Length: 179
Image (cartoon, rainbow, N blue to C red; front, side, top):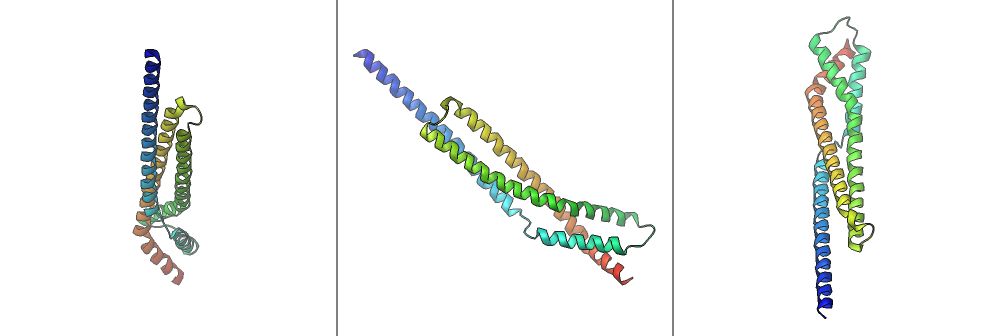
């Protein structure tokens, strides 16, 4: 009788340990979900909603200068501005791609975490590897965070260049047409 009581106690202890471990896994998944929500907010608040219009405006200015500037030599400061403007214009496409990649990564990661949570709830798969799966997903969330931080930095740098140079170079390009 004592042996049966001992085994029942051991079994209950093991079950409570598994429930505790399961709760820990759920908490970590919930934390990753919250981090994804914060990353999505950061990404969406830094979206360039006028990206196509910026691309058209910068292409127009650059083309106007290219087609109408007929000087043999140009001032060094103007050359630096034109070069910075050209670099900025070329970075608009990759910025749009990085934004889309960030959105897609967040959606895919949410789905992965949802599936992992279901697997843990149902006890599916190899239970001893749940820790490895969670650690792997944490690394993916860190990579998404890095991706979004890089996007925001590049976007801010590009927009600063645009606001610093566009008005001046647009005016300059328009004066070339009259000459």
